[in-house]
Image (cartoon, rainbow, N blue to C red):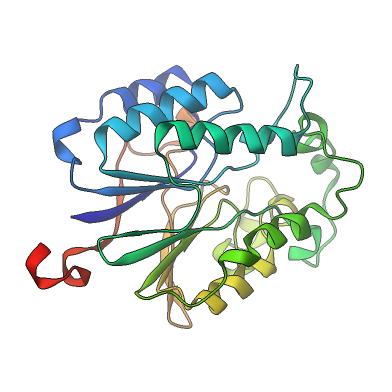
Length: 259
């Protein structure tokens, strides 16, 4: 029994959609999967993808990314769409709230990026960033990253077992390569939020899964393992296929009579 992770499935691309469809049900029937955001922006595609994964895994966890909150051609704002995605997850038996699996607590964290995540001024290329044009927010919302941070507060507590947390956005700037090596130089300005890191530390997480940057890594910083395992866009992939990343084996945390 394993806890696995993936992010940035982007199944609005036919090639990515086929990779999810080809996942063998028998291979993962005893495993739990974290999906750290960015499946698609269309509700039907989100529903189909999560439904397919739910058929193939014993347990599925999900938190939305920025693409899920795009509302092009819709009468909803992005927060209303968030609530619709939560209802969809309930219908599919996909966990968007903390839940215990195999003796380990998996804690999803809502997130958005703080422009102050990086101290350098963004380049002009950021003016075309899709979130600025395709998300629509309630007028009274205030700072978006603070709004999502506050949504997590009821779940930031002590748990009776190891905690693995996950968010779509990055919790630490060190999880990005240096700016001068990035193809998209303004990525740090729309990549993460340090408030997520504060919540990770309060949860005493042993590992944290994230997505968004499409830059995969597996790194330990100050005792916490940070993992990104993004499928990414077809044109970005250097290796074929869909590979889930193992975060941990769950048997050691089960009661002896359940191992």
